[in-house]
Length: 107
Image (cartoon, rainbow, N blue to C red; front, side, top):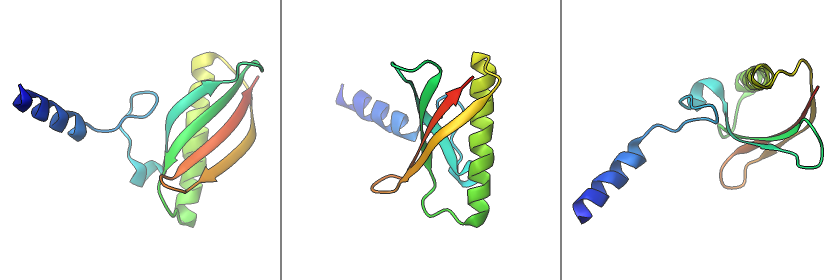
């Protein structure tokens, strides 16, 4: 029985990480990847997005980060039927694991 558990843990550990939409994460290429999306309970059409990001991005990667963010926001807009977006806040957190937090309001 313990052999089966050990094999299962090994296989789960080797599985590729997936973003919020089920796409494989390729941080070297995309710089950020959406891992969590939470809707604001008190304000309609306001979302809190959490991304993992590459540590210590250079200037080229910062422009990729903006393009990837726009791609994710476009995907969310298309999925939920929104036509406009307003980014209310963007914040980086690099304490233990680099995270990028975005608060966005859709219309």
